[in-house]
Length: 118
Image (cartoon, rainbow, N blue to C red; front, top):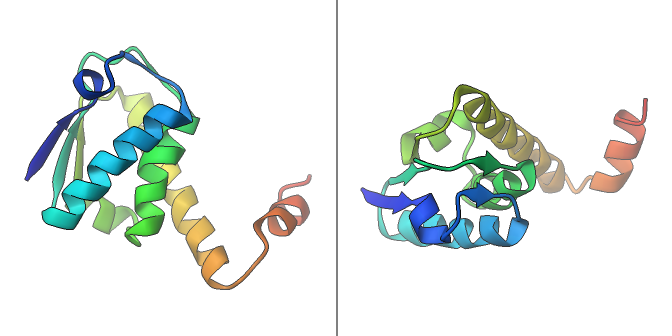
């Protein structure tokens, strides 16, 4: 199992930008390509944004076709507060839904504008 210390690797305790999320995505992607699982440690982080999560964990979910169960088997997330764990779960759920829509060739902008407009 590959271990990634997010704060140490990113060099900051503020995990807010999609660019940082993309860096984490690349590390996880490379680890998943070489190993069956990866341990992602968020210890000592201060702030976490949805754009960071979407660009890292959400994109991993989509690219590796990981629903919540497969995600939990391959990626062990530790060091997050409960609210942020809930945000990770929501991020994965949203990624799964986006992948299903894209696989069906549904235009995401049109779908979201008609289904979430109200």
